[in-house]
Image (tube, rainbow, N blue to C red):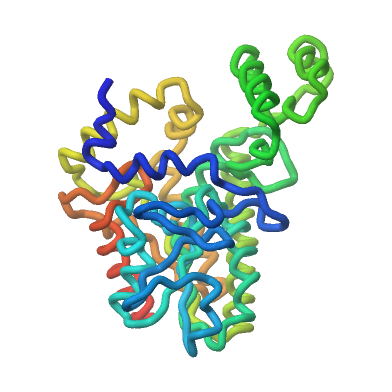
Length: 345
């Protein structure tokens, strides 16, 4: 089958090639691809993408060179998956429209706690921070609805699998698919125990599973903690802090364009039998309403500027390259949305 996605959005081929470049790092759990260089994408030695500011490109190492800076933080949407170049990401659009430096702290696969830890690694270097904008949320929502095993730790996409050898990853992956077990449960085991796990070890280690409501409650508990962290930081730094729930296309009021319809249909053929297909069914409009209400209430309690972005995306023009990532035009109008909302605060 022809990859219609690459035909309509050729830039996505390059993002797909980047998957193996993600790095596991201390404390923050993961970073973006470190020192990645290509025709359209470049990252610094922390794994963050460069921002086009005036006539040059800036990165985290440049923070101390400015009297005033801004941060936009999130997952792969902030990183710019879907943008055709570093010039067209949300941070570059914000820099262009304001004439001020906006640093891109987008982490592919990042959850809120990862985003926050990366932020506090750098804030002491800034002479003055004007705005911190979290354009985030979907990774936290998705991973909490994806992972249904009980754990005292945050749910995340990355759980250290990348650090193991190709042989170990391959064997554990095949066993996980054949015997319907969690790859993370076996990849750390000696090979003999790994092979025997489906027949012996699994019966000794019965997993406790969360109900759908328990998954939601765990998500809400994490959001509550995160908002307290945001509020504490905003108060200490005396800055404007904004949290924007990023768009998930099925929760927006958007009428899909022909290109979006074609690409989404193609992606659905690839997602048959995957975890995404199963978890997507949990991401109902009812869940969205509950999340939006909860975030609104929690933000009011701690005096954080919260905005839900979903009602903004109404145009019939092509904005999304998939369910959460934006093309160049999507990034441009998103930067307008961000500026309109932080300026009202």
